[in-house]
Length: 530
Image (cartoon, rainbow, N blue to C red; front, side, top):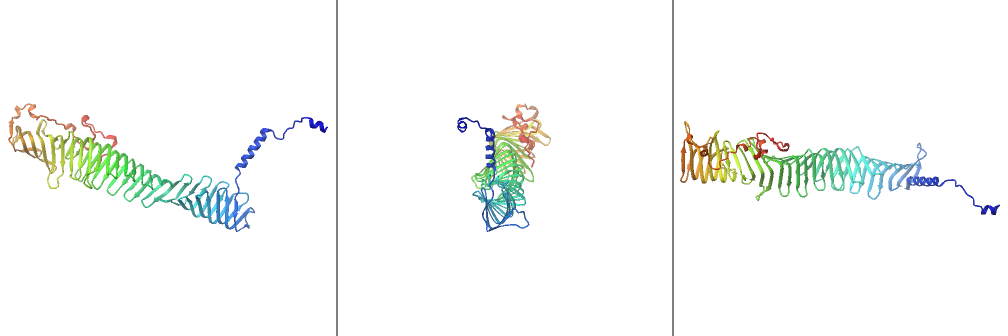
């Protein structure tokens, strides 16, 4: 039987089939992998049970050191609970996680089963160069996220930040602050209700009404960021910068303190209180180091005083320093049009020298003042401190003064100098190829049209009309009765009355000469009210 049994192949049925065995092994391995390590006591002066507490409670006293996974905990006294990873630590508690994170407090409740710690009383969290202090702090040890909600302070190598509520993402070097947020260092202060701060880059992102102050300016915005290391800033909503003498408003402002380059977009308004000027536009680029600025897209320059205001528009406005310290050169080019109560004009380009108070109008310039129209290849306006202001007309100079619906006094010459007294044209000196065509008057009225020519002419005005002419060199003239005049004789060669191009209000500065209509057209909703 035995030999027979030994030679006979017997089929055995396993207790566990292959699929069931595989499942068992898989489940066992998974459970083993998920099982957490228990808290280890590495050092303690002594341990004792606690009367009146659960039998599973153990108290460790004197120089306690505990380890759980990658966490070490030092304290004076610890309460441990058998079968759990919960610890109540009291007195000089110090938790170390990894190589760089340290948590200090008088009291800590640690729950290793869920990776959570709550610290209170003199809490300090240190991660690399960043230190967080608070009275109470919750810490998610698995995800390395800490929370405080009863006032906290963050200090790193450059910046100090305080708030009522905070959330610190340690691995991302990112801290969120809420309610009464204050940030500061030697270079700036920041006040906001919502801020997130990157401890690596030094960038503070703000949401909601925020104020940033440095040694020179105060910045306001509802959204944007400021870099505490570099001073670079980007203001994205309801933004303004207020300085000692200048204010800047725009939908968007970006400024790099290191290279001095800035950019402002959308309804830009720069108010220079000291010089009583306002610059408007939709795009402004400036370089603080080079002291240059460029304004485009509905650019407007406004100069205001108690008596009157100048409104000037061009495709582009540009400022640059003059060779003399503190002085500027302001350039406006392509489609320049300006309006002031007593003077209006247009040209292709304009240059203003602040040192000499000289304005140059280039390429087909025209100026209107009261009943007068002045044109030339080049017009210069000079403000003179101890005398009348001057108008210099160079090459193809022509002055037309409208006296009636179809009557125009005319002066033509190579060069002219006009003198302005009490904001009115007082005298004109004509030098070279001088020609005049004016209506001669006596008490009873107009007696004829006087045509005269001379190389040099001095013309005086009274109440806008020519009332005295002095021909310095060899005049040639003729007085012709009104009824004997032909239409051609009423005009000097080159006569063009361009009153339809004249800006009649501050709104007209946006109209292009070639498409002048009776309509008022503002570009891109730029507000030009003073």
